[in-house]
Image (cartoon, rainbow, N blue to C red; front, side):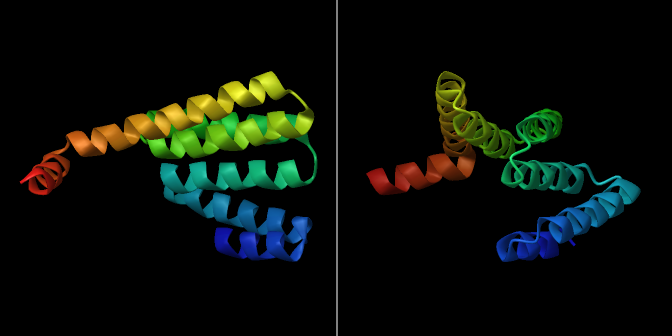
Length: 130
């Protein structure tokens, strides 16, 4: 359903997109699937941003960010922080946007560093050095 929401977004039909994402969210909530819920909340933020509803968009991105922190995904947290940065940029809140963009990049760098620290990452590095 969330994918159908994105198709509707690309077609410019935000009402249908909102309905599709809402249906997907209801299913994920029924399943108690936190990752699916967080992704749908992010999609709601995107739809609100396209509707120029800055407050709702920012609230959705912040809620999704909190969920991804709880779920332990720095990368998904960063994606939503980037979405919030976009909202701030579009609002003309450039200093806030800049801070959010920088924090998002920092979070991605930390995620990539953590992956390199894994055994597989260390083995790949050692293989390239020999």
